[in-house]
Each structure stands twice: as structure tokens, then as C-alpha cells.
Image (cartoon, rainbow, N blue to C red; front, side, top):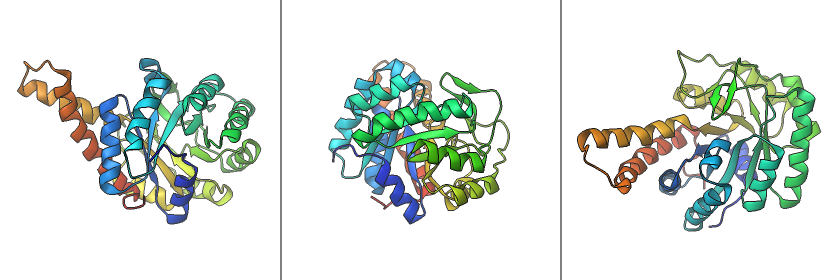
Length: 282
């Protein structure tokens, strides 16, 4: 089927009490692995690219890759701009065919975040493209964006933010971090429950790579409808290539790297989809 937007995916997840897995892809092989995992589990899926991934390729390149794989898939696939770093990038992504947009103004003040988010929503709405935004700061490093400290989402601000921007989903900060964790993360799950009480739209959890299955499952029970995974996929792909080169250091054909990387990423994605509870939901 053709690419779909994330709006109905997330609303269905909210009604069904599960979360859609959203997976960052860096190359063709990772796109194929993610779609293959979704096909095998009959799960809806979101494939994401960040600004640095887009700088490595282009918006047009990733749109073509994901569109080609989605066209031959029987499950719904959405192409999402993850951590959109500017209004201009968000607009360009909409124009080339992305079907879901995140604008990340969380590094600015509250009013500045509202302003840029409203502008993106105004452009996306006529195209029926849903918009995700972030309030509070998820710690750690995502591409070139690095938070010096975690600032968890305030429930009252969240309610105001959603009302004033008209976004379709909200990424919340409850103690997660981008990248792998140093030590055991402590999540403010009660804060998540409080946000759920005052915000009706689907909630998003960033920084899930390295969280325990139990933490992810509990967050989904408390209202998370989309869970982002990035670092784990990169590690799975790279570890598979490293293992191949250790066993066969004479390997030089890049296709050989993809042939071991694809099943490694596919297995990881299937595991995370089952944790999110989206398997069998397509």
C-alpha cells in the first residue's frame, strides 16, 4: 500500500491500548529490515529520519526509499521527520512526501516553541499531515542536538501547549534520554499519568533504546501511543557488520554487510514491536 499518515495509526493505538513502534533508518537496508519486521508481525509502523540522516542523504532519497518499500507492503507505513530542527525543514519534508512531521522547538522558550509549532501545523493542516511536537527536554544526544540537562514536561503547560498549537501528538519528557543509558534510568511515570489526565491527544516516548521491556510496557499502559527507537538499531546493524569482518576480514563487498545487517535489525524491530503491543494490529 502507499504511504499513510500517522494520525489514524496513533488514534487506533490510543483506543487499543498499545503503541506504534517508530524506528529510525539510516540506509536502504534498515528501511527494508523495518518493513520486513512489520510485514511478518502484521504491525503498523513508522520509519523516521533525523536532520543529520537527511543531511547524509536527502529528503528526496529517503522519501523514495520508504515509498518503494511501502508500496509493496500490506501493512500501513508512515514516513516521519524526527526532531525536525526548523520550520523550513518541516515544510520541505511535507513538500517531498513525508506523511508525518515532528517540529522540535523544545530547546527554545515556551512561547517560542508554541510559535514555531503553530506555524508548522498551519502548513501541514491543508495537506492533512499530522504534527508531533516536544515539550520539556529529553536528555542525552540525538544527532547534533544535545540537552545539557533533563527538564521534565509540566502537565499544566502540556495542556496549554496542545490547546494553543493544534498538534496531533505530544512527545513528553519523563526522564528518558537519547542514546544508550549510563546506569539505570529512573522514569517519572506518575508525571506521565498526570499528563495523560489533561492531554487528550496521543503521547510519544522518545529515548526508548536501552529501557527495560517492563518500563516501556508500563509507559504504554499510562498513555504512550508511539515509542521511538534509534540507537539500538544502529548498534544492531553495526555489530552484525563487525562480527562479519571479524570472521571474514577479507570481505569487501558492501552487499555482504547489508545481508548480515538486515536480519539483525529486523529481529530487534520485531522484539520492540512485541513490547509495544502493536503486533497483529495492522
